[in-house]
Amino acid sequence: QVQLVESGGGLVQPGGSLRLSCVASGRTVSMGWYRQAPGKQRELVATFTSGGSTNYADSVKGRFTISRDNAKNTVFLQMNSLKPEDTAVYYCNAKTSPLTPAYWGQGTQVTVSS
Image 1 (tube, rainbow, N blue to C red):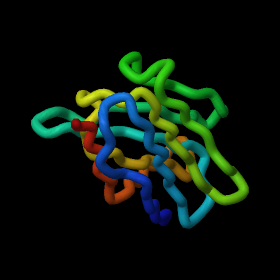
Image 2: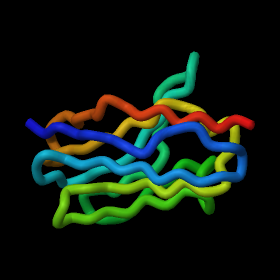
Image 3: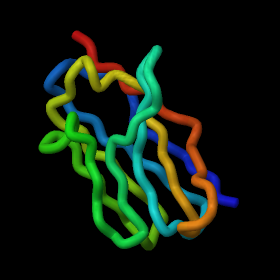
Image 4: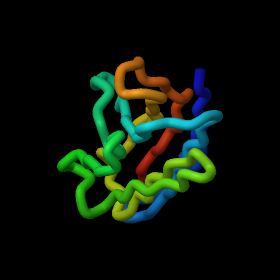
């Protein structure tokens, strides 16, 4: 079993930046970020696949960047040019093998507001 701990959320003005971090307690084969806004379904933001490639939601391409430190089992999400519609709870997601269910973190709130 893997535990995921997110950090870095907060309140930021439109156009601002935040950097989220997620530390896994063990080795993972894929990690990524999802978000859920009030009244909406959870959606993919950015992920690393088990093959090492990245996927981004169209709404964040060019503004968000996912990166990782494999030695520290950590994944980051650099969020620039934030918009009010980016407001959501951001969840870290990870898998320990391609065939097992994913693990989820507890979520970190990101609020973009003036």
